[in-house]
Amino acid sequence: MLLAPSILASDFTDLKSEIKKIEEGGADLIHMDIMDGHFVPNISYGPDIVRQISEITDMPFDVHLMIENPERYIEKFITKNTEYICVHEEASVHLNRLIDQIKSAGARAGVAINPSTPVVMLDEVLRDVDMVLVMAVNPGFGGQKFLDLSYNKIKALDEKRKHMDLGFKIAVDGGVTLDNAEKLAASGSDIFVMGTYIFKAEDVRAHTEHVKKQLVKYKQC
Ligand code: DX5
Ligand code: ZN
Image (cartoon, rainbow, N blue to C red; front, side, top):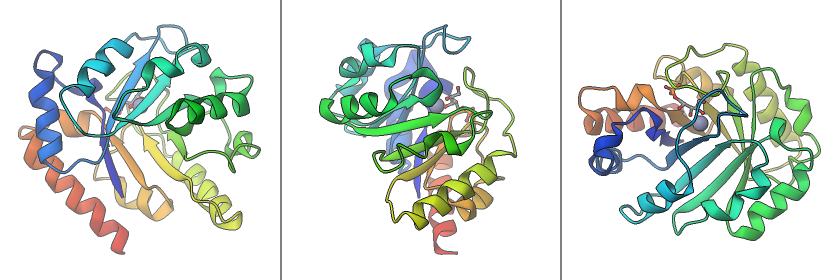
């Protein structure tokens, strides 16, 4: 059970201390939402910021590319911290090649699917991926409402994973809170991306610690 706070919801004027709070609270990964204003209707930040953040922390990065033509940018997101690079199925016409590119660049490969994309679209790549990221909102913005259709998609992925005897992680992203995390864990999620729920807390460090402790309990159920 891994907690991956998304810094999209953090105070960018005080990023260093925001990261310190989630690190001290026991978060596992920093989720980085990269948006290009084309694949999604919003623009966030790019590789230079990711690189600068790698200079101030040892936490591993989970880089979520919500961009068109992701193959042009993979290598730019490699830093000493980059653990996962996650691309959208909908943004690639040569997904197998892109997965190979991510691995050759030195990261683990993730593939994300939008709420309207069925799990079956990933059948031919499941053997090659390290993570599948299920979007529980239409990507582009933090703070949106979780879509219930996500549970069945996560269950279906978990069943395929067991049936095919594979080890990829299942991440869920968008509207995730402690109100839905237990059901998400029971459905098969391993990585919980949380933006607003972590960074809008009054005491981010203490809240991160609390959330992580709860997630670990769910695993034991
Ligand atoms: C949405 C992003 C999410 C988002 C999560 O496009 O991919 O990672 O920042 O934020 P919350 O948890 O606020 O929905
Ligand atoms: Zn994300």
